[in-house]
Structures are given as C-alpha cells and as structure tokens.
Image 1: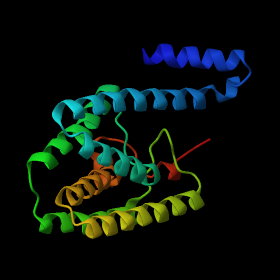
Image 2 (image 1 turned 30 degrees about the horizontal axis):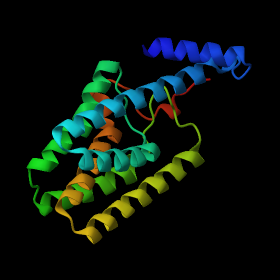
Image 3 (image 1 turned 30 degrees about the vertical axis):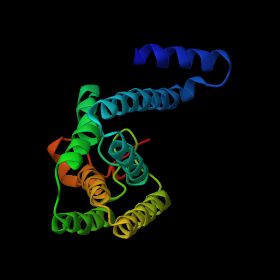
Image 4 (image 1 turned 135 degrees about the vertical axis):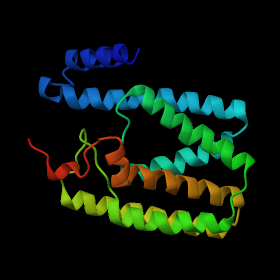
Length: 198
C-alpha cells in the first residue's frame, strides 16, 4: 500500500513538473515518511482509545515528536521494527503510566541523566540523514536543550504525577534513541556526518 501511494504521488508530481529526476530520492523519502507518520499515528490513536489512554498518548506523542524533531536519533532498519517500537513507545508506555506509579526519586534521576544525554549527544543523525552542517547541529542542540528545560519547568509547575511520568518517559526514550550505545547494539553507524561522502 505504501509503495502504491509513493509511486502514484511521484508520478503525479513528475507529470505536473513539480518533481525532477534528480529530486526523486528526496521526494520518495518525504512521501514515505508522511505515509508512515499518518498510518502509525492513526493506529496508535485508535488503540489508545480502546485502552482508555488517549489523553496520555496524545501528550506523549506531542512532547516526544517535538523533542525528536530537534534531537533526532536512531531509526528502525525495517518497517516491522518501526511498528514494534512505535507501539512500545506510545501504547505500552501509556498503559504503564496509567496503571503504575513511579516514585519521584526515579523521575528526577531520569531528568538529570536526560539532560546530560541531550547535552552530549543531541542531535544524533542517521546514515539516511547525516547532519552535515555544524551550525544546524549546534542550533538543534540548543533547541533540544530549551525544550528539555521547558518540559522540566512545566512538569514541576503542574505538579501532576501522570504529567511528570509522561515527561520522564519521553526524555528516557529519546535519551536511549540518541545514545551511541544504542547505535552500537543495532549495528548502525553513529555521527554519520563525519564519514559522509557526496
């Protein structure tokens, strides 16, 4: 289904002179990302309604996507792995937050460790999207740190146990995604901008 959507879209763009041969790779990647985002988001939201975790899932989706948009991180090498991690991040963590209470001590440890992870390793690129511009890497790191600070201030200000847990999960998951050890475990190159060849 995805291939049909991507192929038909590219053919339409080429036919209407909106895409040239040299741009096909970029358009294909973008269309695949759009398709994956909407299909996975639809399934996640449907499941969250069924499990009664819609509100928690929406907050995780919002805060995680925003932080990941600037700190980047590892991507699954196969679609099936992507589905597994997506459901794990948004559905299992939502159920965990709904039914279990995490002591503040552990939440604050996650906050502290996440700060250092983002400071040291964000943004973490991938072989498919190496971050070649030093300026862009610096800007993304600064924005990621600002988002981190905003999340912590918001969590402390609201003083809501579930919200604290949501922020902690988002930071924990993203910290794992940008950690060099995670890349090593899954045999994916790290700091791809250093070895990128045109």
